[in-house]
Amino acid sequence: MLNKVRPALGRVLTPIGRAVARTGVSPNAITTVGTAGVATGALILFPRGEFFWGTMVITAFVLFDMLDGAVARVTGKISKFGAFLDSTMDRVADAAIFSGLMIGLYRDGQEQLAAVALYCLVSGVVVSYAKARAEGLGYTCDVGIAERAERLIVALVAAGFHGLGVPYILAFALWVLAVLSTVTVGQRFATVYRQAASGAGNGAPEAAAPAPRPAAKAGPERRP
Image 1 (cartoon, rainbow, N blue to C red):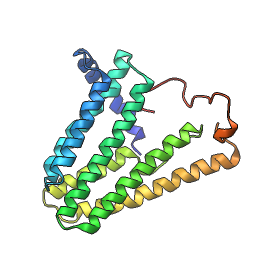
Image 2 (image 1 turned 90 degrees about the horizontal axis):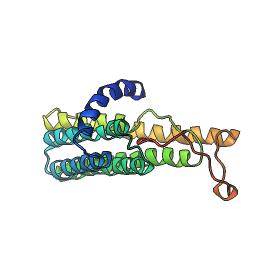
Image 3 (image 1 turned 120 degrees about the horizontal axis):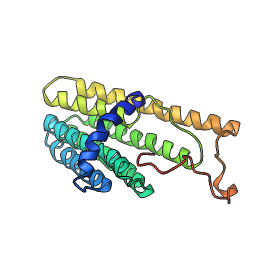
Image 4 (image 1 turned 30 degrees about the vertical axis):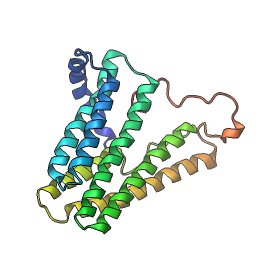
């Protein structure tokens, strides 16, 4: 849903990426530091009930982490390992955010809502894995009403307002995320199933494909 604003966001981040690149910081270092900051804010502040300040720390490091792709482009340090590291660290950050919410809610005595946060964590992992696995098999899977960016925005905005004392907003947001994530998983299953049934794409059973599999894209990128 946010794909339409990404080109504009890229134009904003590119000049910042050039400035950061002049410091000599590598894209992989930015990815690692950004993820470490997100995990620290989520797993230390959320469990203590500091939802507002936890959200502020996480948001700062999420914005910092967005620079890795910009720095990679302006320095030409685009690599398959960088793409792998970036995607893997995204999963770590997501796990930390929803785990922190789950622990914080459980400690507040909101066991049911903590269970919903756990469901959001698991379903989010399935959403990401479904796309990665589909593309690894040669299918396209760029569908879904709630991709990672949407999930993070909803969760963090709600957690921040919850920390300011706004009632029911976090509960509402987590239930909405649970539903939207489930719908997104269904959308991706349906999309891949249609391609498999029609023989579209490059998908084929792994055992029947001894030849090298064609790449899904023309060249490596930081964010597949």
